[in-house]
Amino acid sequence: MRKVVFGSIVVLFGAMLVLGGCAKQEVVKKDEPVAAAVPPSAVQPEPAKPVVQEEPVAAQPIKEAPVTASEEQAPAASTVAASESLFEKVYFDFDSSALSQKSRDALSKNADVLKQQADMKVQIEGNCDERGSAEYNLALGERRAKSAMSYLVNLGVPASRLSTISYGEEKPADPGHDEAAWAKNRRDEFLIVK
Image 1: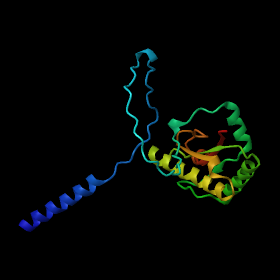
Image 2: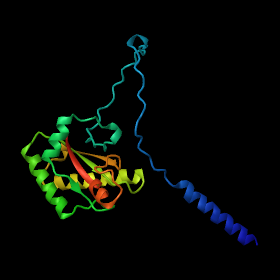
Image 3: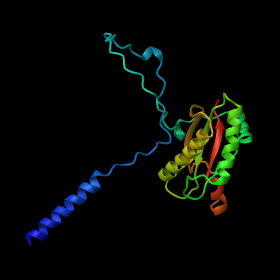
Image 4: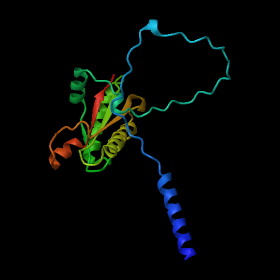
């Protein structure tokens, strides 16, 4: 009897460790409240701090953080129109970020445009259909955008001219709820940012 009770306690304790030790997934916040502006007369100056000289630190390369939908600035209408006429959209199969031959052909044409416009910077926007959780679709949209970015870099477009963002299911191209609409929503779009 003692062995059964002791074994049960060990199993319960192990289950608590496994379940309690799982990392929680961080959720991207859509809209952060903006703090009200404080008039300059209401701000109290901080007391001066003594200057401490530190040893110089070796320069580290800056890694670009992925841009989320809440950090995006609304583009001008003319930029969006120019993007739509210059770049082809890239479409994906259900629950996939793999590039089909048709997608690679579209990306090759987009790479040619970027090579001709040496000062142009582009944001690759990953999108999904409505199936799946919001968090899953944001991750899938990011994988789709990075897949296209990687292919463009392999074609000779400098990575410094490309950025990615995932909208998940937030910006459907077709609001329908059938396979035809979903196929249009599983896409990457290209937006000129400079």
